[in-house]
Length: 405
Image (tube, rainbow, N blue to C red; front, side, top):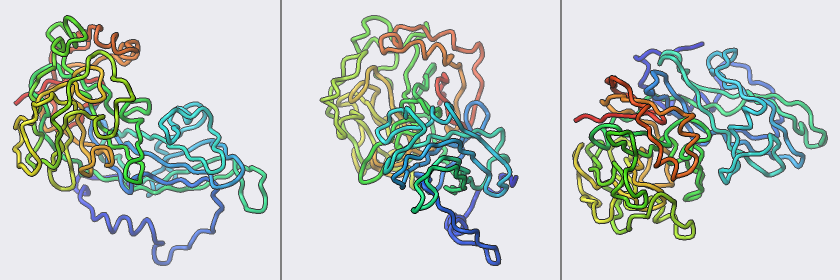
């Protein structure tokens, strides 16, 4: 397996992509193969990011499309290191394969069969123990039952390799979007059943996972509660009204400041939600190098910046609220590759300094299966006795974070 070193982190992507498209001089061209299911990555390149678990995470999607009149049945997919094809990084088959498969409407697929002219999205998440283990490129070996020639419609076993995708490690390093202790990273990366992770949206003529690495930040009070008092009052929530901070120097490119708070702890009527108001009052900030920071669900009238205004890291851009498609006050934050809130690709990032203060057990979170239960639950048992200092890591789902100046 070809491994990385930190000295290899800077690469010329046009050259890397060129080698994906053209054979190497003198190399024998393989025979053509009939591939009934097209397999392609949604992004031309993806990234690895260091999480708070000390491991490197790679998150991306494959689009699987059946081109033949006969149904195709998926059997197995193997993720390979493109520089050492015998090295299998991950294998998905059977029910585990099905659990990662989604329709284009984001519902869970109920079968591994793909009918003619239908497509599925495969949500992938790889982890590596060290940066040196992260490959330069990935390939995917697919096994399925499908038609193998235009003349013979009989489904047979088919195996082929497809969907090359290079990996980068140039993720943005940002500051914290909030200050203070006991902030919980709800709905964070990286599993396929996550609210943000599993949401693809058809915007501006393409499928986008703008919220791929989004986090909903909510705050615990000193007793480990998200709210104390009337759960229908936004002021009962520990995080309501907190200052939202610019994570880097940059220029504001979009904002909204006119929407009222929703009444918690329930989502608004879906009929009232559209692409313009779904994220509530918000700020989009160009932080340079093709990266854009997005801060959403802010209080009405609290946004302090305007499009074209240059802001500094740590500057207050608004206050945490409950506007838009939200059931409780929180800050929705993510980084994306364009200024469109939903029509961009969500990107990983690392925060340069914070303390890991705890971890909410996944079983406890799953048991709080309604908004009312989530608010009523006491999450204080997830706090550590002693927070641990972290730097240049991405906060994973259900981590409890202390942000320090």
